[in-house]
Length: 424
Image (cartoon, rainbow, N blue to C red; front, side, top):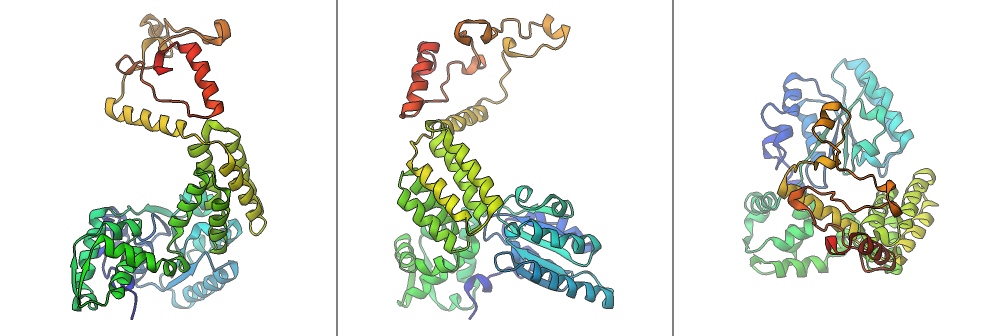
């Protein structure tokens, strides 16, 4: 029997969850299907939002041949073989170009992506790629310029609740069982918003219960999923769980945990640049100004990994992960920008104080733009106290130095300058 996620795969565009901007009436994809002109495109969105299914459905509705490759296990050789098939098909049949779907296209390197260019440009294939990473960074510009990029929305809790209900009521196998759904929070939390993972988890739990009447609660779901978690690990379903454990080990100053989870990702074939990007984020979010060199090292590690590749890149990632784990920690700048953005959302576009405004014209000068501004470099120690926030929020503290040696030194310097303002 097929897995539940496969059995519940949408059979029509109308069955898709939360993607009406792409497949609703007068949407880009509906228009393409009506006109018969299918452009090459890249679907960008979280796991389990329907990227593969959408590509397959476009192929069926447009009556085009469908070839599928995974960027994890395929290379230039496989790409060229399919392009040759597609080219011959076009020459002899004169029909529409077949669709070549590449899952996780961001894992293709530059030469692999370049091998697609000619076939896309000549119309031998219609390329469809799926990626969880920003195509602007992961797809070469020449290929990106030949494709439309469509973003798939994340699934909300309501969407996932609805999917569970539909599976229990409409799936031919589950419909025969006596299933009552009392709680779904645990199942949804485990899924991480991934519809495929949600349905696989639901099926796993139901198949683990031998009672005639099945009552789904958070406790039962957690117990059964934890007992069977390794099954999902082998199939790559724990992609986001493992990267979470990796970053939390670094945040928790445990180099041993960091190296272990790094090894798990490397052995599982994780994208090296994905790991390196997360190290960059951690260097700023979790270490920040407690050790500014961490960001420099993480950035250098990212550049080195991009240049060198596997297997040597594992050494660089390990060095960086251990360095970050051993660094002093501070999330002060992360918290500061969060508070500042929240204030902006609450207070709107407050006017810039006159003394801080630019005055390139005579009229602006006549209106006192910049009149009371004090040029810091003209004063002792390059500092003079003045107000830099709008009147409505003056004195608001966004940055609170962390409890580490470097930022505490910053705090002492701020105290001397601002003399109690901002709480310093």
